[in-house]
Image (cartoon, rainbow, N blue to C red; front, top):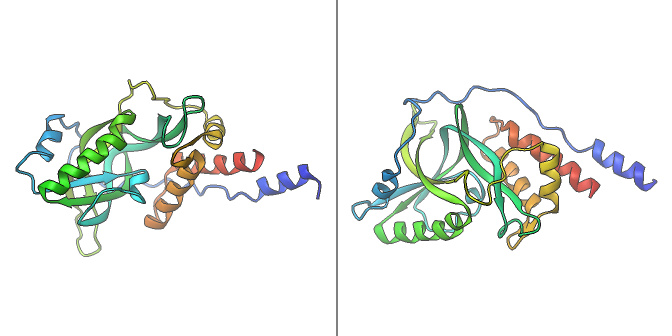
Length: 232
């Protein structure tokens, strides 16, 4: 088979994303912005446990010790690949794109919430996240998340620490055409591996954890990344 025909055949067989519009789980509280002082509350000397919400690589690689983990939803937040990265998934010449959260009233982000118990474990986890996330353009936020269980009709709501990219940070890339973003992602590579590996891992892990949920932005971007990989 000629090379051009082979490439076209491969592109034609890249699975298209299944886009199904679904309403987010109903929030049992009004969506609000929580003050920065709650970060201090979560990590104060009186805290015996801390919930940490992961919506990106923390899902499969938390990097800290935790007591339990549960599937969860952050209501009023949308996951977007808008944060640039010049260390883990890119470099100074070709920054990678990684996930952040954008406040969006009618949206939700699924992920995993981890419970860390004990002052020492909490301090270690927070310090680790400061180095891993906050040194790369993110800031700590406290967000309400729903923990859903088949054993309970109503979800449990907890306040969880998470990391959200400051849109004023020097690495913030913001929105762009998905095809252009996919090309950037395919070419970027950092110390943790190729940027495309991050995007594909994230999409695959979310499908396994939440088979009935859709993430239009991520899954459409994943589709274009797979095509860009074939063409590269």
